[in-house]
Image (cartoon, rainbow, N blue to C red; front, side, top):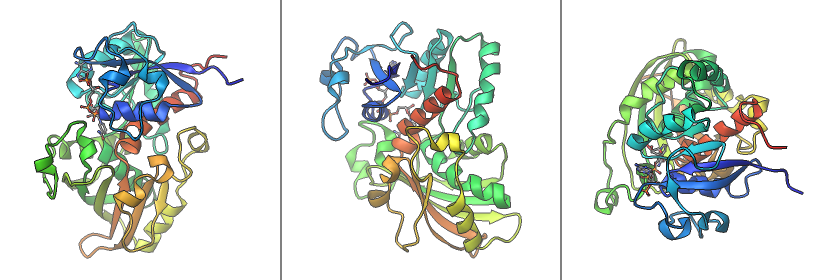
Length: 345
Ligand code: NAP
């Protein structure tokens, strides 16, 4: 007999990240999707009919049969996974947290609020200590936890071990971000195909503050963001300067031996390898490597000397898995394993 699972709702279930959540939650050992919510234009329709499905195959039958509900407290579920568009998230997520739901969000709106954990479980699991104050101060029965921007996950995942080992002084980062990062339908094809768009509204400004909050430390960071004609997988080319001289071999050793805390590595959505080092000179590549570890592994390669700073490297992760839906899932799993959310017996 299978153990009873925690009932969960997905807010914004019809979007790109919402669909990835539906996919990753299918057969999840701890969570069961029992409610799906969308905007007014879809409320009342069966999920399977309303959704323009962009994941492989068809929606899981158990979710396809659910009727889309308004994103308002009252829907069944103990956890509300939010893949809401940002403006809607600002208004709706606090209503859910206030009503007793544990809201685990992908939206940007609350990430920088001081009492909201902005968490990558492998890097800063103790951010959850903010929740006691959050609930007390806001009078919430529930809680709100956020995962970072999809490129910040790549940056923080690689920079955290290096910063802890050597102390980073400055970073230059140029991103090559997949079109799925813009949601669905996202960019018009005439903008995306055979092209590079050197601007993503509001994106560059998020990097330094979000990384600073996750690492509880800051360094100078110059970011250039680009939208490129890749379906899934954000790639970042980095130059990193340290407080002392660091060789590529030393940096490689730190990244190759980095291990997340055992409690995080044991969570159902944690990949076998948080960081995967590639030594082939033409890797990582999004088409080949974004899916590693079920999309939860961050790939690192081309670790080499830099004539301007100390080292150069390339990092890559799946933006809708490690950068969004999978990140939220891992955050929720840590909430469960730390006892913030009870599993039914
Ligand atoms: P998307 O494809 O545009 O989906 C947005 C979802 O929000 C849809 O389900 C939509 O429902 C729903 N929605 C919009 N307005 C609503 C309202 N007033 N009330 C209820 N539901 C509403 O966007 P996405 O790419 O999945 O992104 C979702 C969130 O995750 C965003 O905040 C985004 O910034 C963040 N994020 C995305 C990525 C990524 O790689 N795509 C990565 C990290 C974070 P309808 O279909 O009914 O309109």
